[in-house]
Image (cartoon, rainbow, N blue to C red; front, side):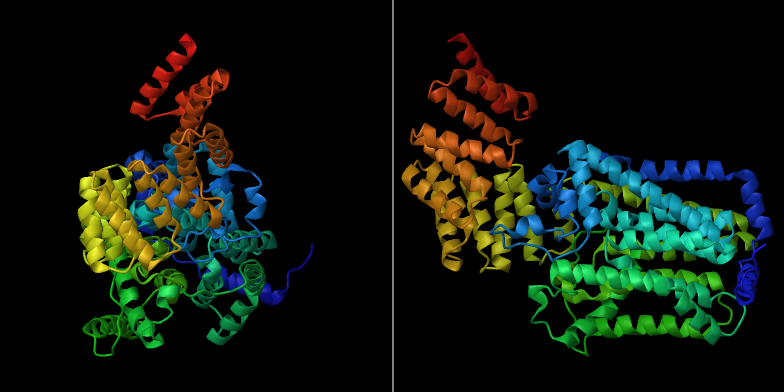
Length: 634
């Protein structure tokens, strides 16, 4: 029989001796009452129950760009392109100036592409898959905590808290927030398999762990810190000296380091950079960045502990001076916590140290706040991985309370579960649609231009022009030099019939940015409404000259050509729009009308039939049916 290396066998023996001791009374009694199968059923049922109302949500925020207007998702070939381009590459070829940072997350793009092929723009399907992934991660949290604690009670409490925690709503109810749960699907198995490798000594678990680690970083960058967590796990084990354990731990994570370096090299090759700085943060002094980080950390801890009334935007002002009271308060809180840990360091268990590491180390990647827009330096989805450690710490505390006072422990668990579950259900309603999302953002950040602006856009999207106008006016007051504000204020004014005021605002936008395609497109639309078709045509051609892929301008040009009785030109442009997006029902309806105008009756009927099969616009359906009846009766 093949003999293992003696030093390795000794270390594995030490590892086995160092497993957390199972709390016999409380854990055994819990296991008798609730078998593992029943525990998992309740865990899954509770998670699904609190997220059930998310299934009725619509596409919001980046979903519109990332899914609805992303033509690349319509081809399976996008999966291959995902590994050689950044997440937002589909938008970089356009004239859109509002483009997020370059991210290398190929498995996220694969996820979007596969979902689009399965569901198209059917929102419930997307939400169902998001929920399915979160449930899967919650089950993995259970197995991870079960392995590192050796206590079903700890695993169950921690997993329930994770499954119900309201900070996860942003990652689950927002379709485009899925990268963190997607990464966790591989991040947690990597942790589980590494611990199993160290406890059992079978190298297949090490290979599986390293592979899962590589897949996790292809979903999102944040799991890159996993090797640091593995080092902490090694350090809190009993046996040998601290120095020996540290050296051995560093050697053991070398394979993970190789994977991390390979990822960075590929990322550099694809993006042309390793790091990125948001343009709006470029002029922020480095001192302000460092002074703001303690406040960000404290805010994240606050959201983990009291996750209520959460928002997409919090807009915390940057800390610019050492005299700022917020800096002193944050530093005092962090130093106080560090001092307590130091004082009680010998009494703190290995499990608590590991829980702290899982929480704090996972936060490190998101503290590089220079990469974010200054209003988005705090985002709840970044707590998805850190919350694993937080829920473990709470579970350890409640399990300890079980030994002292079982009844009181159940009271605490009941209160937390009810509070977290209720908050999650309410928070799902915030993410249900754009209006709800930005109404909450305005509540949290009333002095932010972007919250009022985006709430105005949300109202424009549902044609509530009278409600959009005051939001745009407030955005204009807060930022009087932004052409997009003037453009969309004009759309609100046009919606209530104030065409002259609308044209004046679009012209102001063009004075600020004469090359703005958005402003030229809007001016063309307003001139069309005033029946100035030659002027309208001129504006749309200016947009298409700069950006031939601007489908909105092309649709508007086609409609203008039809108004000028140039049906041949209109047909050409409508067909081009449909080549870009075959699901554009409005373009298909207008194309059918243009075919009918030139006597191409069979083609017109075919277009109306295709549009009617998918149209949800009641008024347009009535118009099409009327035209279809007229054509068929001729």
